[in-house]
Image 1 (tube, rainbow, N blue to C red):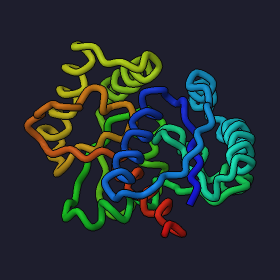
Image 2 (tube, rainbow, N blue to C red):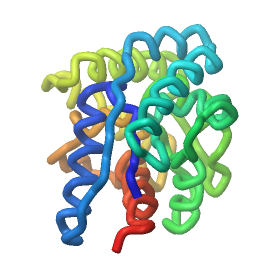
Image 3 (tube, rainbow, N blue to C red):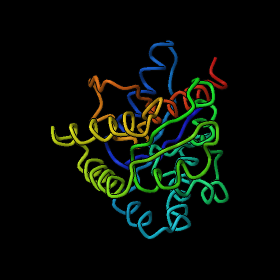
Image 4 (cartoon, rainbow, N blue to C red):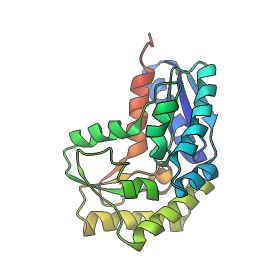
Length: 226
């Protein structure tokens, strides 16, 4: 199946999805049919901060129209933060959506964990995956820590690179979730967090929401592939 991705939010996250999909198909010896439409991370951040999911859904819907014209049969948003408008987008999308939220809910339910902690954007953390994950208890950074995580995450995603200070910051934020809030696993619910955690040994269990979503996209893309 020809898959369409909404990318650009941020650029490093798009590359993470692209690498994951191409590697999966290469490992299977199969051909990947893929088109990417570029969204603007700063524009999405403004709509998130304004709590205006309908405005962002309209932007994504236009991009999905381009993906459909290119031959895509289903579409996915390559950003956990970008899922803040997924309900509104579902109403106006011209293609079926590979929505990360129910995929994550099902995945966490099979992990054998009871309590997870989230790191990512404010929209994801405050809404606890937009209220769509009910298979586990969810906790987030407390008080000013949540604001600090959001601000550092948005800056890193926009820059598409993690500094040493960024890596230390997020590793420490995850440790506080693991130690102080007794989480079974810390979920990287910001797609660009791989920049900070890639190759790290944090000393606590982590799960990458984007990797879980990529797995679902691979399964969808494998439909109609001979």
